[in-house]
Length: 318
Ligand SMILES: [Fe+2]
Image (spheres, rainbow, N blue to C red):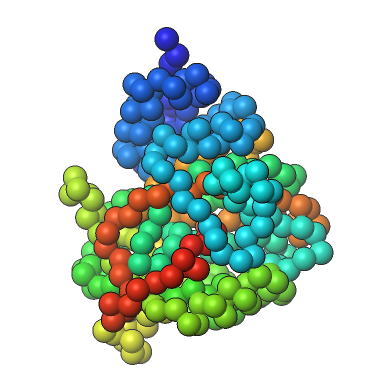
């Protein structure tokens, strides 16, 4: 009978586990599927180590957590066979855009802290990642726990943000970021696809999500994405903006993240209802190719402003 080995992600972290020994055969065992799902629900993220690096295993693992979501957005390119499987490609090709500078360091593929689909009424349950082309340094994916953030927040600020809702818009241009940009940040070359995606976002309704939400077991999650945040619902004024800026600064100060340094035999899942994630960026001269599946499943607390209905265009990679 197949079995899996479970270890803490890191001894000093309150979230995450590592699992070694997941194979196609193990994934056919119903007890193991249930065990992996329970660990995911409890710990918020799982690093799967020593995996056979194949699209088939990537998809088989993903289906443990729910049905996959497809991505019809223009600008998301990939191999047809992989697309059929529900895998999307996120890549940096040297010489192309998507370059920023942070305190003098040039970085490709950098992403600020966020949760996926914040600009949509529906969230996805999770993403499963695999890195195909790994840059020699950098290129790490960072994860932070909304349960830890809620507990670490100053009680005064927690009281001010609890019950508030945050407005999000699909806007990929960092120069337009209103809250939480890191110190010494400059956008050097916008990614070619970012303009057209941002342009399509202008015709869409704004999405609204609670800043804090409560899991069925009573645990509270601080769930604010500095990226794409436009303001606080019913408080789009100087006071509301100052509150959201304070929240984003508090996130930056209190966050205790885990940065994953990738191996080609790793796969990784995170709970998009609970965790924030980011990408550290890497030397723009180096290629990087990430593949991701997206697991369907909404927490049911988001909506579009004025009861608007969204279109399929809202499904995209971030
Ligand atoms: Fe993301």
